[in-house]
Image 1 (cartoon, rainbow, N blue to C red):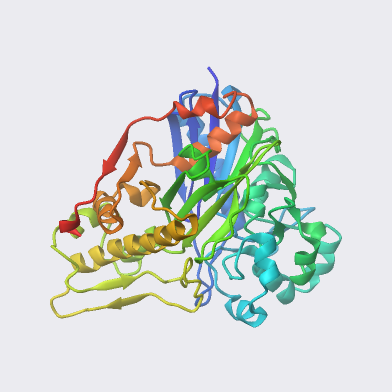
Image 2: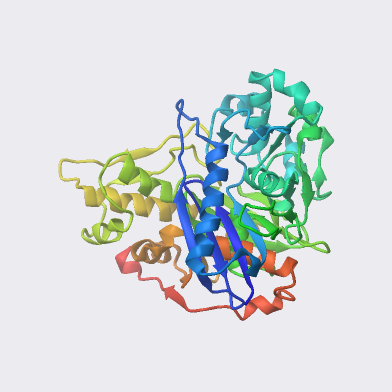
Length: 469
């Protein structure tokens, strides 16, 4: 039999999933990843750990599926976006830790630059530390010896997909969805902007080649998992989740509750400029077409639950939060704003910080846990309301995925505060499935987009019960 694989390189973990022709997972493996916080507001990762653990889960996932790599027609990649990685082109050695998308070290630089409207017109993005350009600008400013090497192509840069593709295949490439998150990419011309590269002092020679999301990027080097399997589809993680939810048509959207909360809606062949704090981005590209999207990104969602576990020790596992939240009738007047990495859309305040208010002697850990889950729902509500104002109509439903979507309390409370149904697929790892869909389409495993629409599976719907909100 033939299968398609997907690498899902997230912020806190990496997984490899094998899918069959019906879009069902037949095997998977997962490893956690380490985040480092060397200074307040700084977030880094070890690029070599990202690579090593990716290769490990590929091998373990194949073993768990009970197949060999020769049975894979292709492998898709989906990844945390905006994270900036630089490495030596000859040795492959990283020249600096990966600067993660959550990193806020360039907040002062972004404030200094100010309102450069032309940047938003070209890229669809606001000027924010979230995106890659100021991270790379910071790196070259603080490591000036790297600039000359980058100008000569001896130091390469990219987002995590580029790092994986280069190490797995020897090709220095990225796709349009990842390129569109750098503040260096013209989303209408579908090319790196020389003006933006000059503005941020980024040598264009060090940037990866940009290819369509649904296309072949290269073949695995011999020995990684055996045969030279094609890397044949690449999407940023939120675009992959939309792809996995089969959001191929204009007006279709979803929210992913992972480390952050990410609302993405397909706006069709023409980019739509937001007037309510959202960003314009690329949903996906094929060799013949481009689909744009509006996106709202809240930087912390599931990471707030992780903080309750690792930072405060209030819970041992994320699964505990549902029963704890249901054990109290309300938050007891406690509100938690999960702005641990600033506020993203629609507020865009890099200086905001997490806040807990309303504490009393009667506050329990259950109240704090419920307040954290409600905080995720409230920030998602902000994103949805901004999206509705931009598109001029109310969403009929909100499709959800990601790890936090397993939480029934969160799904129900989200439906209550929005007043619309929340729809949850049976298989929540739609990010990995989206990468597999892209790879399968590129390799002819599935002949056309319509072939994927029937691969629905069971879904669960949460309807508003406002008396419980």
